[in-house]
Image (tube, rainbow, N blue to C red; front, top):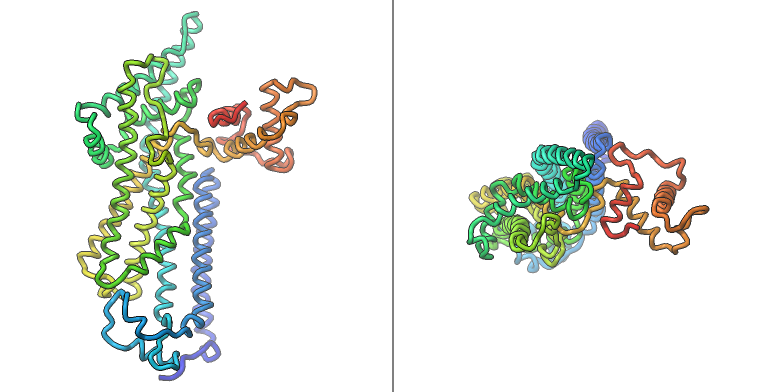
Amino acid sequence: MGKEATLAFTPTWVVAIVCLVIVSISLAAERSLHYLGKYLECKKQKALFSALQRLKEELMLLGFISFVLSLSQGFIVSICIPETSTDFMLPCNRGNSRVAEEGAKICNKKGDVPLLSLEALHQLHIFIFVLGLVHVVFCATTISFSGAKMRKWKHWETEIHREVHEKLVAVQQEKNEGQGSSLSIVVLHREHQDEFVHKRTKGFWMKLAVASWITAFLKQFQDSVSKSDYEALRSAFVVEHYPEKPDIDFHKYMTRAVEYEFKRVVGISWYLWLFVILFLLLNINGWHTYFWLAFLPLFLLLIVGAKLEHIITRLAQEAAISLSNNTEEVPKIKPCKDHFWFHKPELVLHLIHFILFQNSFEISFFFWILVSEGFGSCMMERKPYVISRLVIGVIIEVICSYITLPLYAIVTHMTGQIKLHGFGSRVHESVHGWIGLRKKPFSFWKIPGGDPNADSGREADVTRRVAKERSGSSRSMPMAPADEIVTVDDVAVAAAAVGQGP
């Protein structure tokens, strides 16, 4: 067989057409991501825009990996190893010496073969791009499903706002008559929490740890977050952090917070790449690694969902135990991060991140084999294994996106701590700037011609200084979006919520 033709002996029209197609597809993809970013900016979806930027970074990393593979393929193929070292840890049984015959063309020494053939290197190249593409699609599906589930909670928030407004009007009327108090709002919180405690602790068997765990496991598949759950958890959050502002838009705050955290789920961390390498290492013929590994994300997903449901149940059980000792002014449901594993709520998000990536990796592995080797490849193993793996992958994606992630979105606020990014990026930046300024000497807080101990003057001075430090000049400071205007009250309330306020 003759030597393959180089570009010098390839018709120019062929080279031009191939380049035109490749460049057109690449530019279309790049422009699509660009206009998607513009759309998210117009819709003031800053958290989702940040997630899109993270996706671009991951795609750039995949492109860099591809570039390194292309640049070093000549060197990799020229590395020769003994043929006997390639007889074990194979994904498929090798029934002929085709590799050795092809290797003889490159490796002069008899019995040596290339470290990696050109065909294998090309297949690895395809796998990296398929992995990136499938991961992007899965991330988009995840945020779509979870957003659809959380939008159903909006009408509950609207009903609560209507009830709160009616109570506030009644309180104001009583105050005008000289007999008012905030008791009506307290009663409203108690009504929400009483129904929640009753439903979550109903039955004597719920006192048993095993029964509560089994109930929590099953609850995630049917009405994972009921209306009474939402009302009670919202009430607990408001009483804990905003007792004087019962009409706060908790749904908007929660949505912003989960969108901000979603960008952490989008990326591929270094330990996830280690997992990919480990899978490629253990994908040995007869081990059925591809099949058994499918159950790992499903197992973790069910545990995470049961844990989140059990946290809600534990909050109800603790409230029921202390019910007799509480008064109407004391909240029965007390958010606390002690219910999370190792007292770290972020560990749940890391597990969700791993579950989504591992599932997208398994699906991308299937499409890679389908494109490179075909459905009849030995790496596909038995057809029942392949079909069951695809079914499990779809189930994992739906459960994690439509049930587990929204469940995490609301339960993660039961830690007793505030999430500043839920207020919007401007308030988040302002509070962190405030915290930094608080660490400076006390003389910094003095306002010329005023009382250094005056809270209002101090807050105003801090807000001005934070704005100047962010933009370099108060006159060049860009106008914040309408729903993220930073006022002194916004920054003061948010900073006080994290214990950094004046």
